Image (cartoon, rainbow, N blue to C red):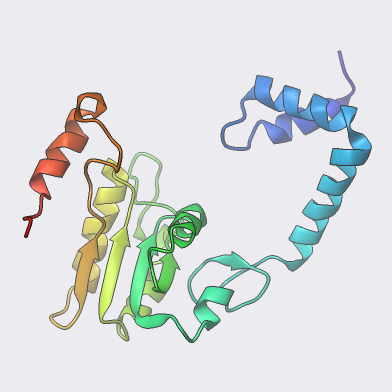
Length: 196
């Protein structure tokens, strides 16, 4: 139906999150139809990114410098570390301008089914960094793996002079109770706060 180059491109694209074989095929067809406007600039951008993007040795973020822009920012509260599963979570919190501290990217979550243990996550440097911290916020996803990882981190970092907190779980802003799942409703009731 098409040459091996096109099939290989489709195969590679289908590995991206949110793109299955059909979506990858449509994306490749669009790239090939608009070679000058899309394919050429995309190729150049990917090559440039491969050459200049680095992983921050302090927090695990990706940036063009090491340490990253966030870790070098003197306006940040360096005694506050927000622990996230991956770089996408860090970027989401940054977009929301919710954290004025620093971050620590774990690189995943503990998962016995997937064979991911503590040694597979960026925990050693977190332990070291937490020695200089006053608070660690665990911003894990509300999944079984995320919560298991949060509990594990609480155990390994526990000391009297360190505050360990986690993001609240529950009803989202604009959410309607009737449309929420039971787990979200239960978490919202459990983590309720008093008014006034």
